[in-house]
Image (cartoon, rainbow, N blue to C red; front, side):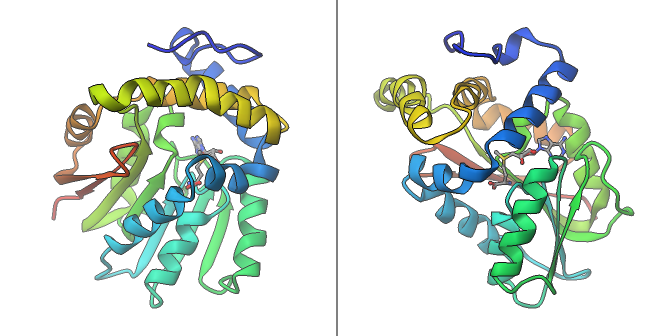
Length: 250
Ligand SMILES: C[S@@+](CC[C@H](N)C(=O)[O-])C[C@H]1O[C@@H](n2cnc3c(N)ncnc32)[C@H](O)[C@@H]1O
């Protein structure tokens, strides 16, 4: 599915995992400056609502700590800290420019005493087992080729009975919406990206990665296979994004 992306990035299905990881690192190091603006603009601010929705589903019961994996510029960390004033938050991302942008945001939001940001890899999280009541990842899992390892790391650091949350965009397969969404991803998005981003080719990767992400039912099964229990899923904005919430068994 998906057209060959013009520009410098190959289609995700045609490259090895390590090539994809290098590509993801390059993409996210070059789009940091306009990342938040383009998220808001391209989603008509729905991304803010989606993260708020995820934060509202979080429950804290033992460690009162939340881990934001692939935290990017820290929006879900901030949403979680605002929604739950008694928790502390740790955000981890492997791109230094993203972590620096998140630190600046957290300072601006006067949340530096409750949110810590670290450079680190989702595949090898630098935390002890069962350190967090809730572990989440927003728009990150799509960019990680070894999903099962990332999910097992998230489970490992989550306390028994705690939640693992995945917020992700997916290609809407609904017959009525499919044509419009494909037009948007493959034709409109590149035009906006060209106008506003220093690295418009990155937005072909965005479309390609969304179109190649598993459908929600299939993704629920992937989560169960990874060991999550009580998996629930919530469609957001006609199913453009989905929140999956599972638990680490007690
Ligand atoms: C689309 S952004 C999402 C950022 C943020 N969570 C948000 O809600 O806007 C994806 C992020 O995943 C990060 N990422 C991808 N693979 C990663 C990995 N293996 N370990 C840590 N971060 C990773 C990228 O650096 C990038 O910042």
